[in-house]
Image (cartoon, rainbow over the protein chains, first blue to last red):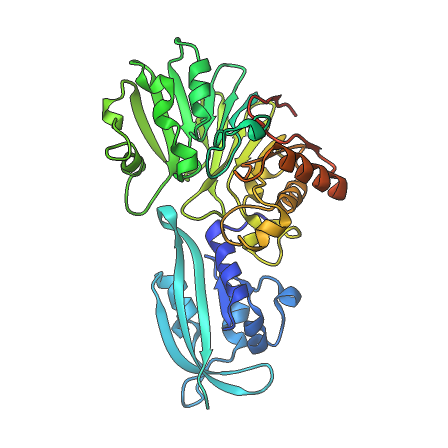
Length: 130
Length: 280
């Protein structure tokens, strides 16, 4: 695999140092990294899964609205940050691999490097207290 | 091609009898090709001696700046060809989202920090902002990419028909995460240094010093050796010596590291005046 861009490497380093779940995707939408707090949501470790295609990670959380209706991928903040190259934020519910439904807020933003190089996007998940 | 070291010190010029062997001038390395193309890597105080050594017939110089920290630009106005009419000076350096390279350099090259501005110098200046894609400079193909060091900093891979030199004078790849040393796809600078015939790389700190300077943008000697091994380089020149490390300290640090790690590649600690013929 070729070397990641420096901004992506530093984003991963930041994610590894933080205690909140963070997901990083490349411009194609592939999930190229998630940190240890994010592993609790996915139920799998990054070392087990490696890079994950967009079609896989966009549904793995079983995202739902307040009425339990599934959210289409295009409504997810990370997908919006990728497709529109614009920050996005949303409150929704997910069903984790552990069978627990969680109310979460997600903030996602595009990663744009020097000379307007589009490098992907990063999302931070925050679980709301019950 | 030939790489010559004119300044090997990091952070601050450190002249004195106890730094005479490795040298006290800050970063400057020249790379000269067989067809005569001259590339100057950084413009620390070492560039003054380089300028004095160049023939008056020289018509074009390419100065590749990794970043604009003072130890990498302080010698620039003392580079003799800048005062010669008819000489083309091409200055390459990192782009910024706010000011042009020209404008940022003029912050230093103007009163009150310096009495002479770029406009008053006789040479013809051309500024080029990086990183771009691969570019041709004379007989060389040059790749520039951002690397881990505070403020935009770029590293260079200079390739001729028969050799590759990689220059990463200020670089902290170990800051890139837990995978450092094992996963090249997540290692800053890997693409630039992969398989290089000569790697010139930051070795500013001892292991103990590094622990209290994490994130300063420099490598411990051990990390730099690990990086060289990961990149499978042929020859490694430790560079950017800390100003507090005198000759005896550097001898001891390199000796201990070499005995401990026993690298598979050749190692020549950089010192002022050292010239290396680089071939595959």
